[in-house]
Length: 455
Image (cartoon, rainbow, N blue to C red):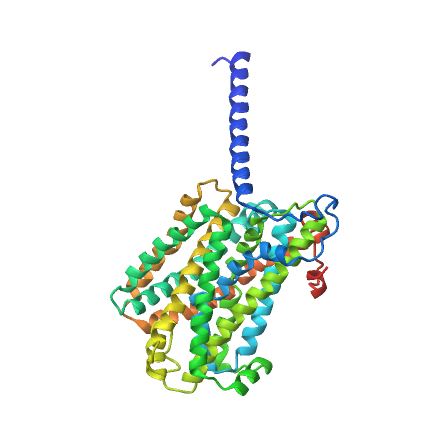
C-alpha cells in the first residue's frame, strides 16, 4: 500500500485545523454564554481609580448584589432528609442533640466558606479542579462517590415532596404520582433561570420563607420548654441509644454534594480572579451572606427538633415516628384549629422538598459536567441528572409505598450514608484549597485557623 502523498497530508492537516477552530469557537460561545448569565457587581465610585489590589469599602448595596448563592446553598441544610433527622432526633433524644445540630451547622459553614473560596479565587468549581488535579482512577472514584451521595439525597428530597403532596391532597395522589409531579416541577423552576439568576434566587427565597413561617408556627403552637431547649444547645450530651440519630444529624447537615455546588454557585457573580482586592471583597460578602443563610437554616432545624422533642420524647410513638407519619402524629398531639398543624407541616415539607430538588439537580449538573467534562445543553444535562435520581426513587416509592416503617428506616440510613460520603468531598476540598499553585495568595495553611477566613 503506497504512503499518503503530501497533498493528502496537507488536506488532513487542514481538516484537523478546521475541527480545532470549530471546537474553540464552540468553547468560546459556551463561555461567553455563561459569562452573560453572570451578575456584574460594579462599584462606580472606585472602579475608575482602583486597580483591584485593595478591597473597596463595605457597601450594603453590594452585599445585596452578592446575596443569593449562600441561600441556595443553605437549602441542602433544610431538605426532607434534614427534617427526618430533626424529627427523629427530637422524638428519640429529646433536646439532648441540639448542641450537635448547632456545631454541625457551624462546621458546615466553615466547609462552605472553603468551597466558596475555591470557586471565587480560581474561577472554576471543585469538580472541574478535581478533574484536572487527580489521576483518572481517583477522579472516577470521587465522581462515583459524589453521585452516590447525590442519589441518596435526591431520594429523600423527592420522597419528601411526594409525601407532602399526598398530605395536602388528602391522599388523592399516591406516593409514586407525587414523585412524578416533583420531577416535572423541577424543570419548571429551571425554566425560571432563563429570566435571570436573580429571578431564580427570588423563587428560592420565597420557598425558604414558607418553610420558616410554617415551622415557626408549629414551634409557637408546641411551646417547648425554654430551659431544656437552652440546656440542649449549651450542654453536650450523648448516649449509646442516640448514636444513630447523632450520626444522622451530622450527615443530613453536612451534605457532600453541597460542597461541590457552592463552589459553582458563587461564580454567578462576575469577579476577576486576577484582582486580589476584588476576590477578597467577594469572599467577604459571601462569608456574611453564608453565615446569615445558615443561621436561618439552623433556626428552622431547631424549630422542627424542639416541636417533636416536646410532643413525643419519652412516648410510645417516639421509635415509630418518621417523615411519612409525622403529620398524623402532629395532628393527634396538637389537634386542628383554624390552621390544622397537619397542613402546616405539609406546606413546610413541600417547600423543603421542592427547593432541595432543584438545588440537587444543579449539583448533579456541576458534578457530572465537571468530573466528566460533558458538553451538553442545560436541559439535556438536567434530564440526565434527574433520571439518575428519579428512576431509583420511583422504585423506592413503589416498593415501600405500603410500608411506612421501612421507608422511615431507609431515610434514616440514607442520612448515615451522607456521613460516610463526607470525606470524599472534604479531602479534595482541603487538599486543593491549600495548594498555592491553584489558590495563589488565597491558599489556606495545613491548620485551618479561623483567621484564614477573615484575612
